[in-house]
Image 1 (tube, rainbow, N blue to C red):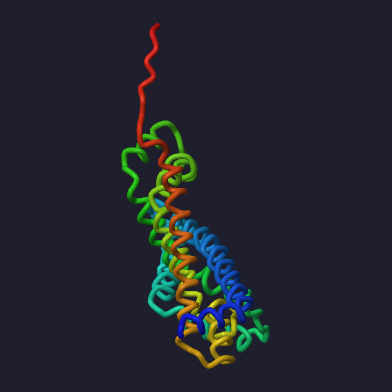
Image 2 (cartoon, rainbow, N blue to C red; image 1 turned 120 degrees about the horizontal axis):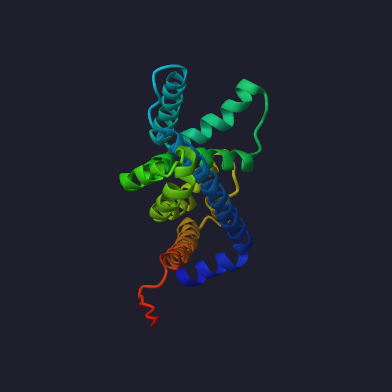
Length: 240
């Protein structure tokens, strides 16, 4: 029976699956947070109002051009290719061999940052223009407007997209096995290479991925619901 075989493979190799699942979640979580911060910085810079002609305008144009190149390159190439180029390219040009886990964090973070930059920019632009004008009218500069008025609203609006990127990263970290990172897919290949039961082994892994993404999706939805507050409101009527 396939079920008995699947059960036996899991019971005999659960340590491999657990180690791979933990590494997958750690890489995905930390890289998503770092990528979000990268995207937040890039998104804010790209929404700075156009400067007056002069040195500041030239600097702004160069910065926007560099960030546009970064976004296009990392959104336009597969993460697997990025992993190969970075992991084998860094020692080629610097003579320094990256640690595999460090390389994993770096690769997923900058890849996520490229996607998050556009998400953040969209979130900032979605805030009503009147709020910018109101902040300017009371004397706020661009930084103050962003910190106290725009970003709190923009971050709430893009929270589902950030959570979705986290889920995507859990699945996409499987490509890191190509550089020897011991995430879940790498461990699955190890177990399958030991017992030669490929269908059963990968079936177990598919269930583990499904369990992780399903659980994290539910947790993120609960967080969103908490941030939305109560769905019912009651007016506080007091007699003066």
